[in-house]
Image: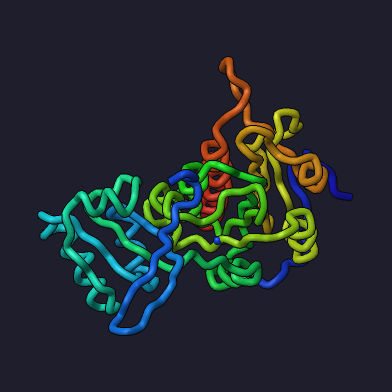
Length: 287
């Protein structure tokens, strides 16, 4: 029998082991190449780490703009990587960079095609290739792009195999998210699903246990069984985890607090849970 709040459980059968609206910052433009005219919708990314990581990951950038006076250091690395990938680099006044984006650009801006999302099988394949039990993060209607970027950054550092988000009422992958993730967006696959409840059921069918956090959870998150194939749900900034997903959790954990506020920022709560799983799995692997 499953039950919310259980501290451990026998492993299931394992399955095969991503200006007016700051959330969506796109550049739509028409370019002329000789006599050809092409319409493209592009995503703008800005900042040294986001652009460098995009190039290092092998992602095709449409164009890179570097501010005047940027000749050495990171600018040299960007020019070298761009040359290797056949990406056009243009030196422009910093005023031009300011016109391209209102993000903090650190002297470099790039345009890329809109971010691609992974499939669920990609997440299981990633875990299998690493020889690890699946460890996924489910974000329940997270709306703040800075929170998503911060979560992706921690997910990359703590070995999460992938992140699952809903298509509706949720922030997607944007230039703002890329900036906040300092480039981790290029290394953590994100799956976007139309029906989160059905996706959770599918994960269960593939042997993954579902853990959520709740102020009324009857188990301390530090007692979680990190050795299971696991997906951890993080609720939205304002509403927390939905009742529907809460009822589907095999475990409900609380985050003990002694201060005057009764909740944590979504990215902070996610970081605590991700690193608790990482800590326990790393300790087991070192034995």
